[in-house]
Image (cartoon, rainbow, N blue to C red):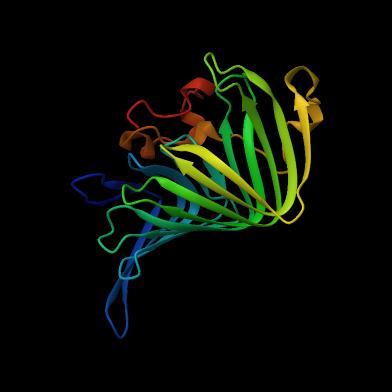
Length: 239
């Protein structure tokens, strides 16, 4: 069990084994967490098999079925996730998802419907408050995103299914503001009542909300011991 202290938002980490050492010649501190890694902060939560924190480089490396949740409710998975912190280690600066990168978020209007973006790799930038600002999806990009009416009650009108070489996503106030599809996107729009069930999930899709630590006490509780949250309870109330 380790705490990365921060007056604004401390990071709490738990695993079966913790190993710390210093590297030469600069005596940089490195902490490695093995087996059953679970961590929590207000800004992000995650699980993986192995987590490495290089303090001097301000980098967290996640490998072994890594999954990460952001404060806007997005779930991120890949074969490897690297998180770059700011120089004071207080907040997120950037993030790289390597191989089989996938972002998932429950749609606000349709039960058991999920917005999804997939690609070979992804690179994200965060603003000064540690909120996601933009995401670049690199290689074999595929997006399933539900379209809603702009006026209340913002009812769903359908789903966009778009394939292209890469996608740029821009965020504002924790929500998607704009998509930019690069190099001749192949797009299909399905009205809400005509969406094929076979088209509602991208390859590799798994909604892993039952694994998400919802508090610092949750890092000591493994998924089998937790009650699985409902879709509309996937985001912690504290975020």
